[in-house]
Length: 473
Image (tube, rainbow, N blue to C red; front, side, top):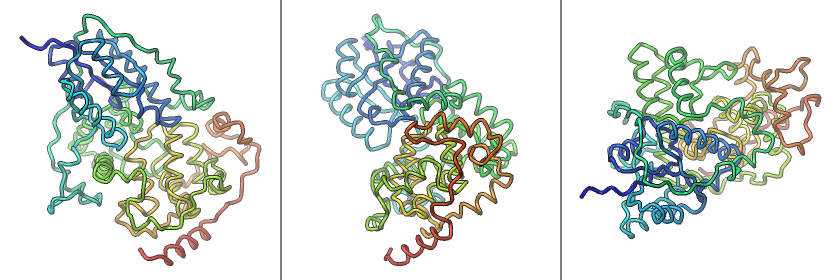
């Protein structure tokens, strides 16, 4: 007799119907499928902006499932206990989920798999978040890659399977289990009044992501190589938000990029390389989990970074009040939109870790609080790369000049004028939104004087280089 017991399909950061290997396998089985999202111990640890944005994605995905005659069952609690209760409630014999690679998720998933398997339940993680599983890419010596460019070359010509179509329906169980109500979880509580501001810049859901990818591949990818560095223009795909929550697959993005490259659009090569940069971040995170918690280069453990977040310089950095316009514009962009241009991310990270000599963890945690496209691997690797403690093939003593970078990449000051209101007779509306999004206790106003630099580029660079020179790397 064929097994007709339900499959629990546990969704996490994979909120889509198309090109979803676990969903495709469940739909193809012919068995009843019960989609589940759990506000578990990992989700509980998410900070304000990511948790709020995840909640928006979950709500939208529930509507998508309803559109094919299914439901998304919501439960809150530790993942293992919730799944065991659902198995008891539904008679399910199988639990499948998309594989994750960050340390917290791996700990959770290993406990779930070992316990349920020991109880006679089929429990399996299925690929779907990456192009290449981290353990399948090895150097000629058999180890993992520690530098991006050799990694990129190693995977560039690898075959990537075609995307999977979305199921038109899922077989429902004879009886649906009870479900929580999403609003009761209050996933946006920590956003406070900022949620109303950021909401206007959010692009939620699979359909919106696919539309965004199609438009980018059609109109903008050809010029991506140059346009991606200009923060004052819309020259990127803006898909990081959707990739973060799995509202579009990296495989769909990869194939769109390769088609554009075949069509003679030169910027597509650089864009695909950025997708591979994301792969590299997960490759490192899997093989060296300390990437999210400790210096990737262990010889940096004695480096004398400031770790006190109460310092006035740290507060000024967080508030976009350093007096360095590129840095301040970027920090304000993040507070209003929940995102930050990639060129700007490098500038603000370099300024914090090198000009201000503050620990990269301060910046990493603040981004985790504020970014709607927060990704555990990319965020950690980006901060360590910028600080010098990470996998950067360029010498650690590179210090970005935020003044010359502004002159090079924001010549007409479109970016800083959009985000900094102080000193302008007619500020851009987005610059004013910053003051509606920030905590009231910051007591900031567009009528304030714009500050002098708390640390100039020259002084900050000189101090950083002197510190580097006086220690043995």
